[in-house]
Each structure stands twice: as structure tokens, then as C-alpha cells.
Image 1 (spheres, rainbow, N blue to C red):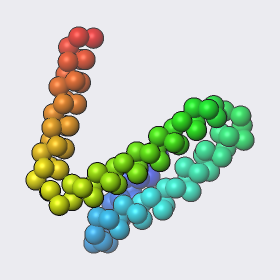
Image 2: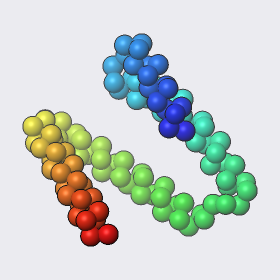
Image 3: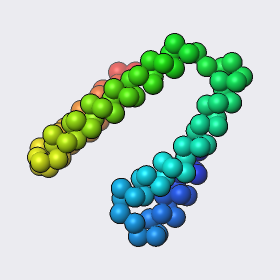
Length: 102
């Protein structure tokens, strides 16, 4: 699946579209593949529905909260960048700590 996404991303990058159009075009092309795969698993009885519902609810809630956060930070671009850098550094420290203690 990653190879398909990378190939599609390269193709759309070459067309010179803005990033937001590239992202939505990629989502539109990959969504049917993901939907078909999910349907196949569901038909085969390989889906744990209570867990799936939790994942879906979490995705919807995360999307709503993320959209609100993005709108709030849109007017504070410098703060948004600093928070992002802080998150990346925190993850890097955590990964390094786990690698050293494991």
C-alpha cells in the first residue's frame, strides 16, 4: 500500500498542484482500496467490531479536535511550529530512551 501511495504522490507532485490538492487527490485514490480491503475483512469475519467502533469513534473525535486546534493555531503560525518541534523532540527523546532501556 505504501508503494502505491508513494507512486501517486510522485505523480501528483509532478503535476504542480498545491499540497492540499495533492493530499485530497491521494486520499480519493487510496480510499477505495482501503474500503475494499476493510469490506473483505468484514465479510470474512475477521473484524472485532467493538474495537473497530472504538477506532472509528476515536478517529472522528480526533478529527474534530484536530480541526479546532488547527483553526486556533492558524493565526499563531510561530506557536504552531514551536509546538510541532516540541512534539517531535519529545517523541525523539522517548524513542531514544526506550531504545536505551530495552
